[in-house]
Amino acid sequence: MTAEPTGHEPTAHEPASRAQIAAITIEYLASELEVSPAEIGLTDPLKALPGADSMKLLRVVSKLERQWDIEFDDQAVFAADTVEELVTLVHTYVSGELTTP
Image (cartoon, rainbow, N blue to C red):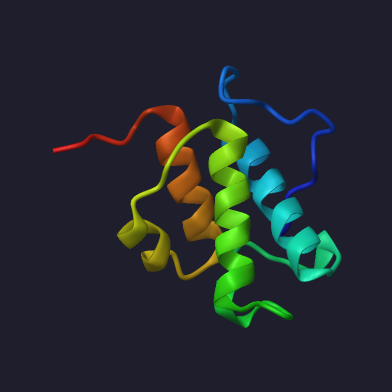
């Protein structure tokens, strides 16, 4: 299952639904990897995506951070194995559900 872009990308000052985050994440991955968004599913392992390597994935993470003016914990980023886990990470930061010690 892939999410479709909504046509309007929320910013750091606008709330984003999980579906919007999924669509934008998939859009950024597809753009960076030069594949169609339809080729990327939420359950796909990030490292198994066509053309994926650590530098390209880090560029996607950087774009996501800029999109919502957030900064991910490095350990959390490297712990995300699938597209869904990356979406969950972004949603946690964007929604304010993240609690810091």
